Length: 203
Image (cartoon, rainbow, N blue to C red; front, side, top):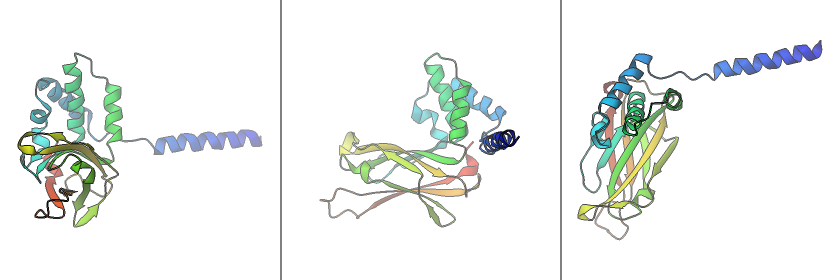
């Protein structure tokens, strides 16, 4: 009798925990359909063209760059675009997994411009909301940059923040810090690039 009771309690705890850990999809089925249609319809566009409405771009110059807010809608649209380009059927399991993974996050893809090959490794990111500076839960920038015109170096990456204390209609600032080449004394000690996003304006 005791064994049965213990077994029943264990089953209850396991199933109860599983229910508590169920992750809510951050957008509705209708929005998912709209995102898929958007991705398939615009599959021929480049990434820059495709994500233009979600991107703040300050131009091609040292100390500047661009940041793209990867919303759940845009994430699904990009998956649909990728599948269309490869003439593949979009796997809805992958869509659901991607949406669940980002349900508690705010994600940005960034491109920054520096003046030496490894400047990207010095990059630091913060999200500012209501005067509070929030550290990322993960960030990545290319260790060695791409060399482009005008002797400019390009570093690309991705940064993720928890959205736990940030409303969906919040106004936030993405702050990017990185160091210039040490030998160039006339430049400031630290370069700061700030991207201001009104989350309510991005689907």
